[in-house]
Amino acid sequence: MQERSRRDAIGMGVALLNRLARSRAIDRLGWRKQTERVVFEATKTGFRTAGALTRSFTAASKLAKPSRLPAAKGAGRFDLTPTDDQQMVVGVVTEFAAEVLRPGAPDADTASTTDAKVLAQSAELGLSLIEVPEELGGIVTERSAMTGVLVAEAMAHGDMGQAVACLAPAAVSTAISLWGDETQQATYLPAFTGESVPAAALAIVEPRPLFDPFALTTRATRQRTGHLLNGVKSLVPRGAEAEVFVIAAQLEDQGPALFLVESDHPGVTIEAEPSMGLRAASLSRVLLEDVPAVQLGTSEDYTECVRLSRLGWCALSLGTAKAVLDYVTPYVNERTAFGEPISHRQSVAFMVANIGIELEGMRLVTYRAGSRAEQGLPFAREVALARRLCSEKGMQIGTDGVQLLGGHGFVKEHPVERWYRDLRAVGVMEGAVLV
Image (cartoon, rainbow, N blue to C red):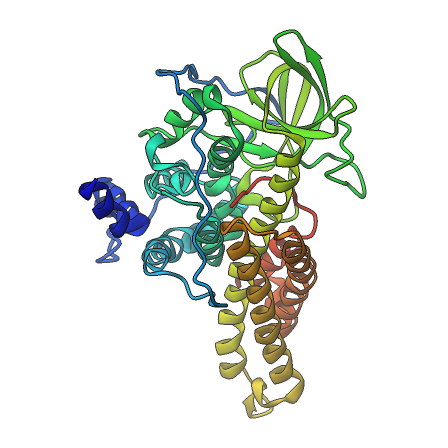
């Protein structure tokens, strides 16, 4: 009992740092000395492939009941300051984003894929463990949605496309931790807490205009031993290499729900889906034809999933919008026209100031929604406000960033055009990430 209390006091941050210290990533990357460069090898996804060959997902042991994380305890006051544990975790992720994701972003965008070495290094950070209970091999003893928000924000400050690719498996492990039954947790979570984290994806979007996540065309037909899925999912990160999917489908007359699908079934087909932004996430379409699946959670759980996913996208927009602000501020101070910095022009100075103002508003509503979700409080209103603000203002920040660079904003020599493309995804994406 005393030992357990000691571990709880140390907290999630130290557990994550200890996991990182045991990995070979520090030696391989030279994070402290900053002497090594990451080698990116580009491989493109084929136009259409069968589902990835998967490992065998079997339950090594049987759980008596599903493990659920309790809600985090509130401080009793309005305070969105990250805890010491969260600051430690974010510090590690921020360093990874700055030293690995940011330098490799142009190559990843051009290749339309995230390098396998980067994905392996992100897995060693323990990103898929943030919402997995400690008793199931994770690193937390209570709900940590706010930690997920902070991690997604820090990752996106490096590069949103690679961040989505790295965080995709964590969306599946989080969904199984939150809503999986004892069999599903025993079957799948050991893979996400082990040494070789499988590629996985949460697929909600469908390829049709004005998509509504609560009016799905992908159908789940009830069978004696489970369900059969038929339909098409779109904008699925790393679809060609994913070993397991969490698929959103309409369950007969009961409304939308989530389903677990292993990708090696004959009815699973993957199509590459080249996109304007998030190119490093290797977005794909997943075609489902009479694919066997098992239900994950209830229709009420699906509603929470959509909200938590939208919260994750808001967090990603914060990181990328901050990257825009950090880049354009020195640019307008150093760029001269007519014998003076262009920041001396009110139109320029006000535009930069507006980016900072809107970014703070986006951060406030997103953090508030994350904090309420973490404490088990109603957060639908806060997520709706965050989604509206981050999708609209995020796109505006991307547009203003390009405008402030003038002709330089249109060329790939500067990263702002990529951030502009990525920020436009926030208003249309559903699923893929989960906090």
